Picture 1 (cartoon, rainbow, N blue to C red):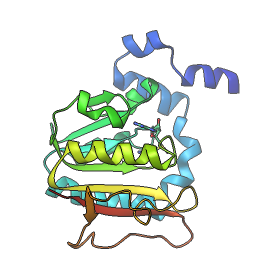
Picture 2 (picture 1 turned 120 degrees about the vertical axis):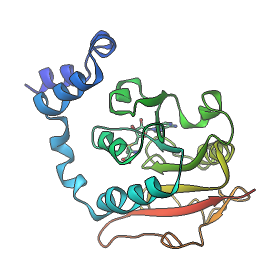
Picture 3 (picture 1 turned 90 degrees about the horizontal axis):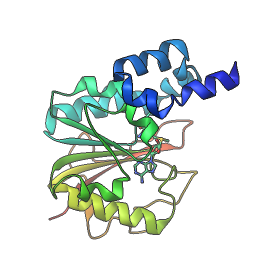
Length: 206
Ligand SMILES: C[S@@+](CC[C@H](N)C(=O)[O-])C[C@H]1O[C@@H](n2cnc3c(N)ncnc32)[C@H](O)[C@@H]1O
């Protein structure tokens, strides 16, 4: 069963091309029960904060939002946004099934090849530092790309794990591109008891 599951889980490249996205999602979620393994993660306070506080607030205050990194537990985020408001980007082609109708298959550092500078007024980068973008040098390249992708004054939300890598802010990686957001409700780092996941809120400098 496990090998059948893993074979099907990847849905062959042909199936990915010919099956409509809703059918692929149905197979993955209802037949292969892809999300079962994420059930406890979905209930963590940090995840609930993303879904119940950050995303609704962002949807109500920003016009063009980019969400980086898609998975079977993030596909429903698109429901919180109006048509044309929400774009996703993910480097792994097989995760495109979890992307928004406006989805880009590419590494985030190449966003400039796919959208003009200043195309977004908010970027949510959650669980990407430490899960693919791991070194300081790589994080710096991504921060520079996000500075170009965002409009001046745009919001950058960075979700990261304090036990996985050093604090990019303490290392000065955001300088001179971003400064800490000073406006409520996101004028401080969000931390969660018993978790290492935190959210930082940064504003793009001119
Ligand atoms: C731990 S998951 C986080 C998914 C999601 N952003 C969330 O809120 O949970 C990390 C995802 O980021 C993707 N990723 C890693 N490095 C990336 C990069 N440079 N550009 C785009 N996606 C990347 C991985 O393929 C993976 O799907």
